Length: 323
Image (cartoon, rainbow, N blue to C red; front, side, top):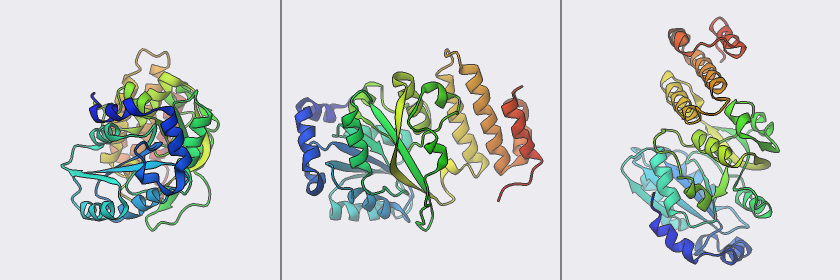
């Protein structure tokens, strides 16, 4: 992958430039030629939420940053809203035909000028201070190319949970490749911050897989395990019924878990590959039972394994569906 535009900037950028950008901080975040952090937002059909998402990013203080938004062929009013906001707030914005989330993330990565970047969904809210805290952590710990943080769930109306999601708190202080590969510790894809150059050198997002965050995290951990997980509030993750990750339909479950299994296949030479494949198949089956027990039964021969983990999940076939 070529990065001609950003390489042009990278040739001129030095640690001193980034240090100055960090020091400038509060008032000139969007006017720095060399922002410390690039926030990359792929927008798609989130007209109800995208303005709040953008403003939550643009309200960040204490660090030089840029926001870059690509609307990936939205069919709602998102392009109109984003065009107006870009003129008002001064972030970089591009609207084009639909190419999918992975292609959009790679395009955004190519445009990034920062030393670090984080991706951010167009229906979530970025808590105050997130960019400053994570970039400061990475600056103090140069041995790490990435760090992850915490999330709080938020409903469609913007009501935020009081506590962090406990699944990700359990991952403090760090996660290894083996722990993530086997589902023993979890990382939320909306909580990352990582070095732009390092991720470009790794090839960016895997274009052969239709999902962006799970393959990215596995690749990072495979190369640089372990990686730190901090207690920074990184994202208020909006649950609104149309989230792909909510896995509330057979179609969504198939998309998520087939991509996860494709990702696991990339590590078929790893000693834990067979165990990991059985585990993710069991999770696939479990997710299917949540939305269609009939479909789960139909897929049982394909997803079954002689493991306690799997057979415990079959109990969901006879238990009442959770509301």
